[in-house]
Every structure is written in structure tokens, then in C-alpha cells.
Length: 488
Image (tube, rainbow, N blue to C red):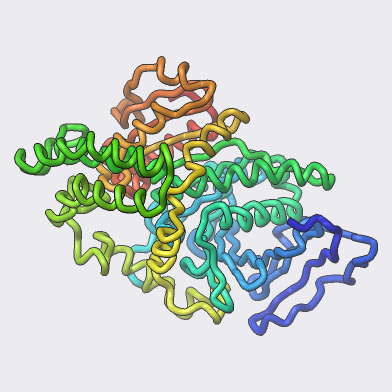
């Protein structure tokens, strides 16, 4: 990270990308820096470019983009790092934007756009057809200022020049940490505000890594006389945080009544049950006790095939065991709505309103080249393990919420509850001493929960992989309680 005080400037970028200073350029030799100060100064037709002397390799382009929910201020832009450009949305809170916390949301994959989370799950509007949206009353910006970011590079509206990319979560984390530091430095009204990193699916791997980078970056910000980011918590939804626990839990979800009555034949379940202890031993020896890339990859592949494939072969929805897959998985990901979202985002009028760079080709919900690149790099398998990042955050007072819809298969509640239970940290004994109990919303049972010392697990009854999509009311209530640090 460059910390030399370089030229800091704020300029406008029109569609041609020609930069024009908003005011007189600063003196690089003197290291002068002045924040833009207010989001009200932003234009709807041109980007403001935000720079910061402590982050010479990064810049942030941002503009007003009043769409989706006309009742709140909305912004879009790019995080520029050399030839890499990450797209983001930002919606101010419907409640008290000058007081409410900040949430940064990301979807998983890796390589799946956070536009899915925005327009399908928890954003201020939902796509209802290929060319329309509707107000979403259970949006998370009811009580928070919310970012949605397309990462890693080449996801969604993000793009790269010269084939640049990243293949490890630790590398992707640096751009996110720099982005938040630059944004908060330019808009002092958000400085010191509680910040929560949230995401689902593969974000269960990425969010703990990103949060750790932000926490460690704070020490550098303080050394440079800058305001640190008030990292308060992380929220992991149906996360792929511990692939080993998750692989073993496929048996519980399909052959026991963990959520619904068993969905596979007895003969199949007998075979799977015999594979579970063998797989636990294989994965521990090849991936944990002594990591060997080829042996670990083989062990996980064999075990996921043995324990998980029998359900996939039924044609069931891997994101919701209570349903069949709608359409072909490769076409709809079992949810035809994803095609409507992609069609909406590919409209020229939508791209123009958002300020999508002309260099970006057609929007795709997920980029499987990214998923494959991260897999080849053993991002989810090789040490350091994601659970160690989670433990490190807890030891430093960063709260951790692990939540899961009860009918998800692929990143299910049983596997998530298992790794949380086994987590090694100073509060582990206190957590394990608690009993799992029910929680409710409006007097109606909403799921199971337990927690201690800043760590909480929550299940959401009837929720699938995208729990805020299936159970928006319960998900919003969960988030409200978590942000306010209220009891469940």
C-alpha cells in the first residue's frame, strides 16, 4: 500500500472519460488534500473522481443515479485500481441516513453479481419483469445505508483491461478496504459510522478476509493521521465458510429431518452415511493436517460427489430443498427471475442511468471463469482457513452473525451451525454453553438461534440460499436487531 502523500484531486468524468477538475488542482509537492465533503455535490450526468494521498493506486468514480427507489438518494460508480474497475451501488437509508449504520453487501460465486442481492433479495426495489421494478418495503436500507459491490473484478458490471484479475480472496480484499477508506475520507458525515460487511454463499469465505484487511488497514490509517473505519460486525448468510463441514452436512439435509422429511431413498442414504466418516478423515488428512493441493482437491471432489451429488441428480433445487429447479440450472440457476434481472440490466436506458462503462459487455448474473480461477487457486481449500479469520475478528471485538435459511442445501444451516460450534477462540466455551432456542417475529416462530460473546448463529425457517428473498420480513427484522445489538 502506498502511503506517500501524492496529488489528491476531485474531478468530473463525462462519458468520454475526459477529466475536468472541479476546482484548482492541489500541489502534489505539498501533499495537499481536501475532501469533496458532501454527496449533494455529485452530478447525475458525470462522475466525480475521488482520490486520496494514502491510496495512490486507487480512485473512486461516483455519480448520482436516482433510480430503483426515488425516495432515497442513490449513487453508482467504480473503484479504479490500475486496469481493474469494480462497480458499486450505494443507497442511503430510508430512516436516518445521517445516523444509521453502513452495510456493504456482496454476493458469492465467486463471480456472481451483487445486483442479484439488490434486485432479488434486499435492495430498495425488486425487478418484476424484464423492464420494470417495484418498491421493496423490506429492503435493508430501511435501517442502514447500503453498498452493493460487484467483485471480484469481471463480475457483473465490473471489468478489467489487459486481462487483469485476481484469484485469491486475500488479493481481492485490498481493493475493498481502499474503497471504503477513500469514500469515507471524502464524505466526513460517514466517518466513525458503524460499518458491517455482509454477504451470502461464497461471500462466507470473502467477507471474513475482507473485514480482516479493513481491520489491519486501520493501523496504517492511524499512522497516516487518518480516521479508521469503524468495523463493527460481519454478517455471513448461507455462507461457504468451512467447505469441509458443509460437505459432510449434505447427509443431514437429505437423509434426516434436519429441515424437512428425508428426500432421498433409504438405500441411497445408507450408502451416503457410510461415506461420511471416511470423507471426514480423508479431508482432514489431505486438507487440514498437512495441506497437499492435489490430494485435498481430490478428497473434496470425491466427497462432494459421494455425499452431495445424489440430491443434485434428483433435479431438486440446490438452493431450496422444498422445490424443484425451475428451468435449466445453467439458464436460470433455478430462478427464472434471474433472467429478468439480467435483461433489465442490459437495457440501454438502465446502463445509461447507472453510468455503466461502455467497455463492459452484456451483463451476466455470474461469471464462471472467475469461479474456476478461484477454484484452481484453491482459494476455499488452502490455508489460511476462513474460520481463522473469523476467530481473529472476534478476538478483536468485531461481532459475527452467521445466519442461514433452513431449506438451503448447498450452504445449509447444519453445516454452518457445525463450524460455528467448533470455532476455536476465547469465547468458544461460552458459546458452546448456550442452548439453541427459538426466535420469533411478531409472535410467529422465525427460526433457531444461539449466541455469546459477540458471536451469534440464526436460522430462518422457510428460507433458502437467498433467505432475504424467501423470508424478507424475518431477514429484515434479524438485521435490525443485529445492527442495534438487541437480543433475539
